[in-house]
Image (cartoon, rainbow, N blue to C red; front, side, top):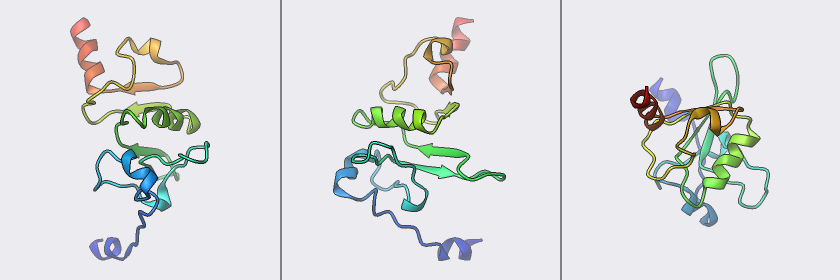
Length: 125
């Protein structure tokens, strides 16, 4: 398995373009060009995200970083354009990027699971 991974060549040129450097939360965690989703607005269409295949289908999931203040609108554009149904937040958010209210008021088109939201729900019951 290691030799197979070592032979794979990934390019990160889009993430390293000058206009995109400030859109990466961490300079050492970049999406490779081959698996990146692009936003439809042309210029500024970069977002630090990659498609992830499942066992049965291509592009089943999207892995992305928590949005920065300057990428928040791009993050939600990605959610809408890719018709995302479930968001799983694995890291504590420094700034809220969704309303901290009841899930039902967020949207009827997707579900958001986060540690913060689950804690709030369990303490209110």
